[in-house]
View 1 (cartoon, one colour):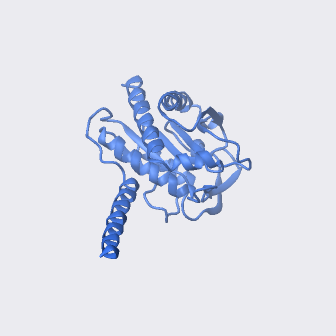
View 2 (view 1 turned 180 degrees about the vertical axis):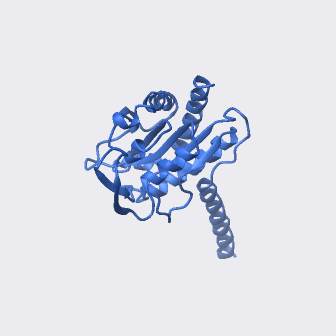
View 3 (view 1 turned 135 degrees about the vertical axis):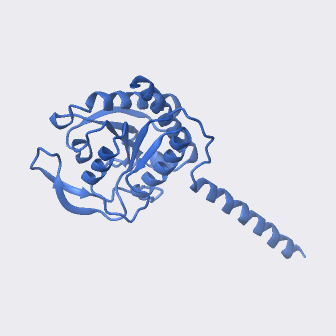
Amino acid sequence: MKSGLLLILATILFVQVFVVDYSLAKPKKQTKTEELKGMVIGLDPGHQKKGDNKKEPVSPNSKRMKPKVSSGTAGVVTKVSEYELNLAVAKKMKAKLESMGATVVMSRETHDVNISNIERAKLMNDAECDIVIRIHADGSDKSSVNGYSILIPSGKDTTSIQKKSKSFATLLDNSMKNQVKGIRSRGLVERSDLTGFNWSTVPVILLEMGFMSNPSDDKTMQTKEYQEQLIQSLANACIQYQKANKK
């Protein structure tokens, strides 16, 4: 009798745990609004399951070549691959932004793809995105290095998009400083060597959500709380950006 009761209790506990885990894996159901109606937002979840080391030019005006796309890094504690984290967060971002009336363009929605950085940029150009957010996580040889950073375009190839890109990045950084707990800001970082920036004709930023090589950042990035804070920060930045750039 006692063993039967224990079996029933164990079964109930298993079902409860399974349901909780499953719910965390899915994008949160959102209440629909129209705060971002008319805005086209590009989301580029960085990397993919298998990298492509074939080369492509880093910019339209350069002979310098870089690999088309890499598979990224992985969590030092969680062992989660960066390409998996990037897409999981991007899908939740998509659900949130669409619930606010935005049109969202995704560069990929599965892991098993082969889309180069030039192709990703051109996809967003063709969609005439108001802003593109490239979603990544960082890595370092030093496990003590931590924090999120927001990369912005610089250099002669991106002069037409630099002002708006920096404007959005500043709004996002300020919003994250106010809302995101557990991962500090490293601020804005100018980059002229990123293929995804140099081939873009629309405003674009790259968010490094934290360092997967840092135990604390790695664990924090996987939490529901951090991801929800990040996504709300992004939504707030989009609202402010749209208001500032209304035609």
